[in-house]
Image 1 (spheres, rainbow, N blue to C red):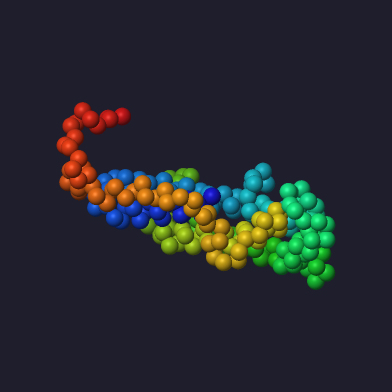
Image 2: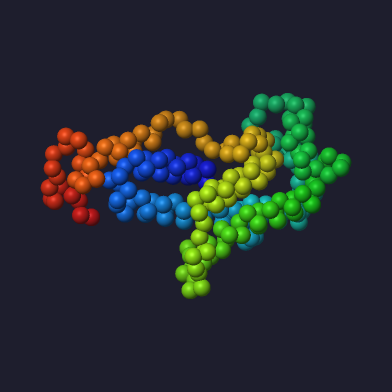
Length: 224
């Protein structure tokens, strides 16, 4: 979802850059605020420490606390709960290849130290995200200052970093593999939907009319 939102906002921003008229309105900063707050909260949710939450952080905590529930046999059992075309021997071979990066020397038990390292990495990735959310979105902290914000580049990096960390565990849980290439979980757009922004580039910056469009009257504007 975060990669989908990032991709959608990127298309929106490209459309804005081509329209002087729309750039002069309140609309672009409003959408930017909605997007940034939504993504920041979404990232913050990945690191939720509440035991009742469904978060990446809680997955790590459960794996560390109960490593026997995440040995090789348990992973194969999880995969058997999903629809797949593999026979037993092929399933075990694929599971072994997927499990190897997180296994101990035996190849059949969880290496808890690796999960702990990933949990620490997640905390580092989300340190600034958590600070921004807690001080400026969830609460209006009086001590918040100019440093309690993130650039677009920092926000993108946080999304990509969390994706790179999470997709190995998604593959472990589901058997659905992802490329190790950065950004490989970005959805493939099925249509050129972003062409809806093309008319914006032709708007007159003064009249907000398209070429050849008649003058609008105040009563034509919905005031709601």
